[in-house]
Length: 293
Length: 295
Image (cartoon, rainbow over all chains, first blue to last red; front, side, top):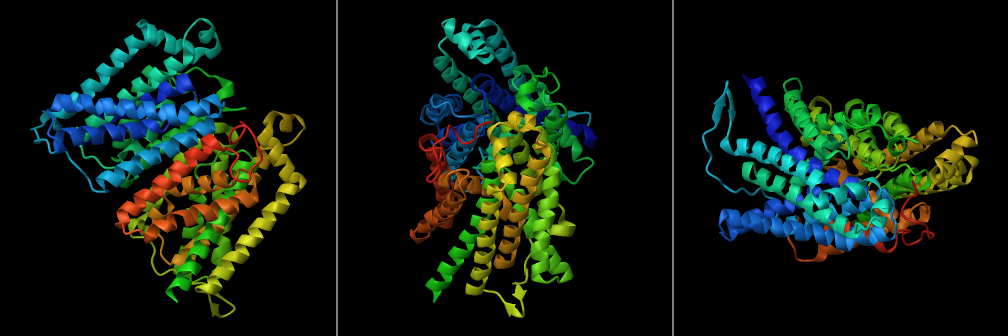
């Protein structure tokens, strides 16, 4: 029935929001500001994959890898040219947030200049969907959900077991202490931007393959990623998965009750409610000084 | 004559943005309320004024003031998160709020006609004179000058000094027995009122409004204006508005398709904002301080 279809649509959308939320959370944890640039790297990845595969006819897997390389280079340049000088000066989180908005608009502006405002598509053959008690899910959508969940498993073990993951958590907890223990904070920060960009980039490519691509596809996605992150528990990477699925499901099932035009508004109402009533999110523990003073 | 009309048009647009930038500077610059959703007040003012004029034929002065008042009342809704949240949490909440407002304008079709917009908003008539061109410019200048002097007076009063104390250190203001919540609400209310007036001026000048005129990009533009001019300097807000409206106008004379001009405008605004934040966070006129706002 239709409600099950909406639920499925919610899970599919949610797995994208979860990836963006993880991308956002990593930077929030380690660099301590709300970064909108995952919205930009998301778009860069989708358009690079499209350019390499469709415009330059490079084989699919190679095109995806090249697209991720372009995405990572973009993130490194953003960090080097904008965030690093600002961090050096000790800029406050609002200045960083505002500059990330500028970065986002610059990147999407450049993409608009190159590719125009029209919608582009990979034009993949439409595979026959699986019938799940009357709801339809395409093989690509199944892959999308699987890849997203798998990435979370990898990310979870990466943060828990690898040296870099541990360094990232140390810097997130206490920068000064991490530095005295011999962790190179600047290098760890740079690597965080790389991992964050890969997550956002994969999300962008998945959305590009599954739907269409256009220059302004990143804005709603980053805002919903932030919402998912706040709802799950900001800064908690595993909570991003929970928050992502929750936002995806609520906004899709919500249009069962509301006109579909309100779909985008639903997520932000939830965002504001959570910021007011439970700023630490579902899984978070309360840290007072961060939210109210 | 076409050139004269064009110059008058640019001056009117500059005037409307001067009012927007001045009003936002009261919230961000003087009170430290990091409001990214200022465009929502602008939109509420524009729609209120236009709907009153279209549906009830109210005289301009009444719909104009109603635009400001309803935007002010709406700010009380925003005040709820504004009072509880600090710093970048407030920034994200106001960003969300602006998107909700845009969403409602697009979807409440029985009231706003949604994406079709509201055409045929009457040009204002004051004392039997219909204002167009140069007379409209005069109206915008009068409102702009009043806004400037009122805000300049306000920030010098004890009320204004308390706002700045809240910006510098909320805890100190609180410990001196100041009702921080009340002052923040009032600052936001005044800021929203003037943004609402600017919305009304825009609606009755262009005579057509639709949700795309009030996208979140407008908020970024207004914030850029006060950052360019120097945060917490009223003269800076004026200079910022002039620079940011004039700068992309030069693009108009390049032989480029309009879609590319739109992209270039966006890039110019965004790059300018980022470069200024890095190189000169205090803006062109601002005094030297750390960062944009101390939170």
